[in-house]
Image (cartoon, rainbow, N blue to C red; front, side, top):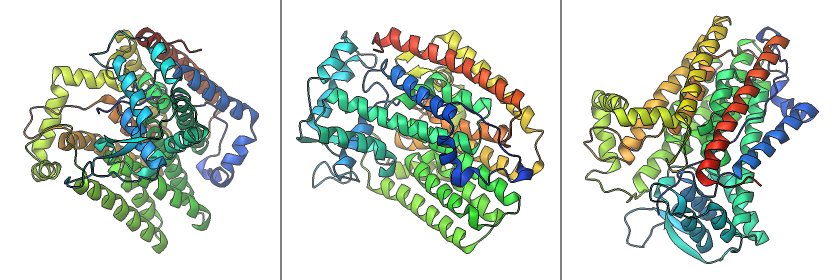
Amino acid sequence: MQATFGATSLTPASAGPGHTAASLPLRAAPAGSTRSWLRRPAQLGLFFLAFFLACTTARLIPAFQSPDEIAHLYRADMIGNGQLLLGKPAPEAKGYSGGHADQHLIQFASWMLKIAGDNKERLSATWLMGQASQHGWANDRQFVDVAGTAYYIPLIYLPHALGLSISRHMEWSMRASYDFTRGMVTLTVLALLAWAWQLLPPNLLVRALVLMPMSAFQILSPTIDGLGIAMTLVLGGLAIAQYQAQCNGGTAAPCRWRYAAILGFTFVLVTSRTHLLPLLAIPLLLLCQRFSWTRLGGFVLLCAASLGWTLFVLLTTMDARIERSHTTLQIVQIYVEDPLYFLGLVGSTLADKDKGYMLIYSFVGVLGWLDTLIPKPAMRGIWAVLAALALLATVYAGREERQYTPLRAVLAICAVTSTLLAFFAIAVTWNDYPVPVIAGVQGRYFIMPALLLALALGPLEKERTPLQQATEFGVTGAMAGYFLLVLAVTLYGRYQLAAF
């Protein structure tokens, strides 16, 4: 069974005035931010409005139309049934590659593959989704290969597994089970984004990256991309809050929970997206800024668990999706011994006319199974907006104190090295050796590194003047309206699936 791609959703918007670093900006944000946020009717209303818009837009996306989505939901179904790690396809197999998923879930995915990719059949997406409404859970399981998900820690699948488990217990149809699970994942993503917003109102560049069609599509689909985007922003917000609090000379005790949360989010991110391993530098920076033996022990445990998990799946996973003359570990050794050769390979991939252009296009709007493209004028317009906002964020950030320079440097280094590791991960798992260019790299892999860079470039102070708040609200509303319109028109033209 081949893999599928992810989906997107939109972030709630409301930026209230915060506090400056000089007035201990984050003292109130960590412990009581969620409760105080829930007591604000306007922000709570915006949250539910965002969830309503997300669910409505998601109705334009038929099931299993995001790459890796099939494998992700199979894996979630396995986890919901108690299979946390992958199993062997046969007792004599040399590695672990899959597990047992419900037969009707497998059949549902097979139906929806008929309208995906270049070889799609002339079938109605509405009719296929209607057929799924007539079939419930089979409660009979079949082994499926999901080797591509072996690198993802089971924790990242908790919303998916919970949604499928509840649906199975309620004996809902495949269509209802899918919609409920997608709603559960989307709600989790929006809740995390709301938390990140409370920690630090995102600059306009961050907002544009989250709202652009590719990100929104991934957030609206029950994959792990949307969760990764949201957790990256939560981690960034927590790290900035902790850094500011430590710069202000407060005691370590009130911030202890925040450092533990940073360790937890870092662990989930680096074990569900291997190219984000450089994020380990964030808790290291905070440890160096204010040392304690407890923090050192937590950081050592984080590194051991993260690297241990990565090594475990590398040694035990059997991925037979492509035929290669070298194993993953052999290709890793080749590139590690000759890093300049690997950097040259990355340069060749970017310089390649087709692959370089596809990376640029797919970063903002190549949806579905790489068969649903937003219009080219919209793609160019979105890139122009991103470039303008990057320049604006950098100008505003330059007005802040130099005390943030180490944090900005670490965030920027994490962004650059994560980008290179994304190429590296695809090169060693999805390509043989030697190859002229790296095949299989998609623009969506770089959304999270781009968010880290946007945080590094933008202002890190929480305070906004009334004029800034009004400007940001207006620009955000305009971007959301345009990006949503582009997404909705593209999806309707591709699938012709009504939202109601």
